Amino acid sequence: MYICTAMRKWLEKGSMNLDYLWYVCRYMVS
Image 1: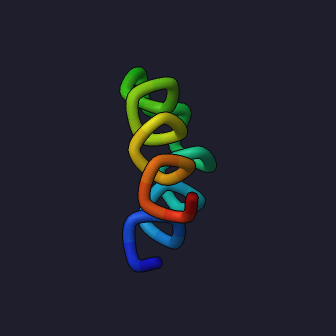
Image 2: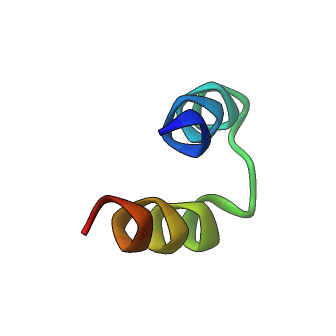
């Protein structure tokens, strides 16, 4: 789940792509 870890780091930076990353992360997990 590397993307989940990357998403967490980007979350701290306030990335604008958070919504997209959340979707991808949940898609890969499920």
